[in-house]
Image (tube, rainbow, N blue to C red; front, side):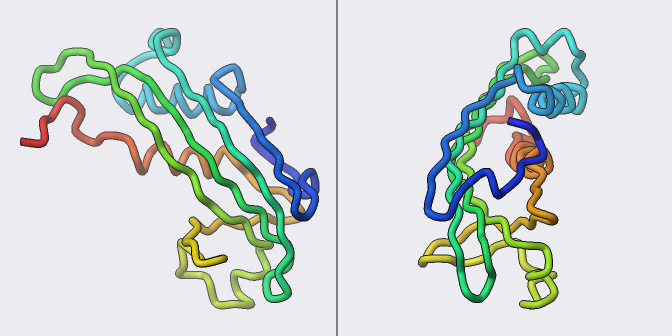
Length: 158
């Protein structure tokens, strides 16, 4: 899967399943950025993993046009430095992904500039946009990873 995904690769009411891992260049780049953000080096890539498993479904709505729905899970295993001991510890993330991609012109047309979520079929979806039938999954996955990573690794919840 390329980071730039052409939404017309999914037909209306078709479900397309995609599974990718750190062998995918843009996922490896996100993982490497996470490691460096944690003060670690590229050497730690070997002991790290990132797996993306999603289902894409496209539907047509009179009000919004074609909407691409993405449901799935993002799994990560990576080392980090404990804020308590300064030692290397293992971290794991399992992040549910539920996002909807609307054509960019809907942002202004429906006054969604300040919105980060949208409701479809009684479900809340994280809101993203596509332009010229292209969406950038790297931006989306990056956001899910960095919004969900543990800011204080090694801290207990007591």
